[in-house]
Image 1 (tube, rainbow, N blue to C red):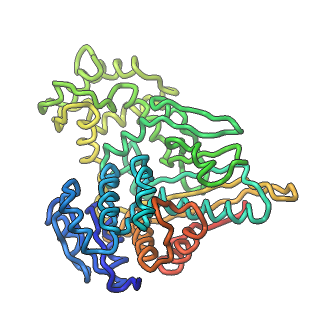
Image 2: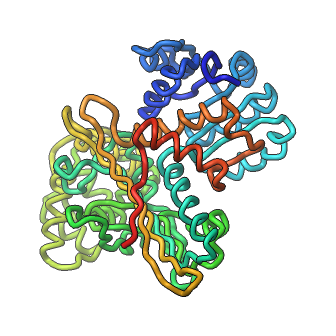
Image 3: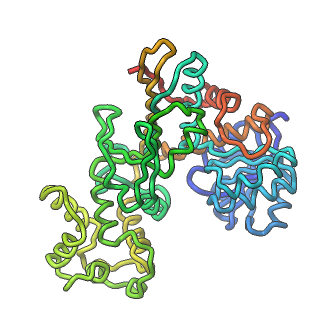
Length: 448
């Protein structure tokens, strides 16, 4: 099918959707943007040709089917819990689907039905997951083709403020839901190291963070992200003794978060007293069970619930908690539990200001053993900055790959049926080529 003139339905209005709309609009694809509220959809269409906005509730099967019947493909950029519903509608209407999300068990269950319907459901094509897969599969395929082995695979990714904009105690800013970011910090992690499987419980995750060197100019720390173990199979590297996928943050972040976890601020258990706009120091007193809301009593209660590496660390973290406002007379934004009440304050204080830019850093590190026994360390690195007033690095590196995948499904380059992800070179190669040649998005490969 020619790409120009084809029709797609884009579900969602998050910040990564705009680059996707631009990629498709410029390719003369007709894009119908659908959101719960018509205003959100209209705002997304502003300034782009070949676009129209509609209001749509994706939980209304009849309305979803009707919208899908009028297009060739649906792009689902809404929360992942809704993807299965969209795919079911696509099966009924025999339309292709593209998402940037991980394939969930609920989505995988529909694989057989998708094959029967003759549709491609392409997933995991943003940044992480997405660009990371493309270059992991590329290097692994090249090494295997030459008879070599991957003995270790490390992959770390971070969406961060640019160094000059990392001006708060967490060295972090929110461009989307802070709740999602903070909840991810409670996830347990699993990975392979030196042939053994290791598990880290959620509350201990931050304590495992270690400095990670990419370039001398960046002070990164890294910690493992969820379950890396299936990637030995997904990437076809049964020989790998170490397999870790993880997250990058700036130094100082894990210690601050660890204390917030230890003192109960990442709990989403309901608390009656967090339903009214009391002063932060009163809320902190209640959450900690402190004797009073005087700062010295709050500090004492914190020290009794957590451990600091040393006095300097203690001073830095306490001053960070002070900066957040936890000891102040400022009123909380009541959200009924510690996590959401904290999120409301962090979102106010840790937004990107006008003229600030973000940074995306993604690096794979491969330990390779060649057929002749020679060893090599190879890296693939993406370092992308946002453009103040334009797209953030995160929006570009998620939204553009998604748009490119849509074009490649429409023109038949990607034509595998069922629920798929970029795990084989027949899918990865055209994506790598188009992203590099047409959009300047690539991972730089080096031998150390």
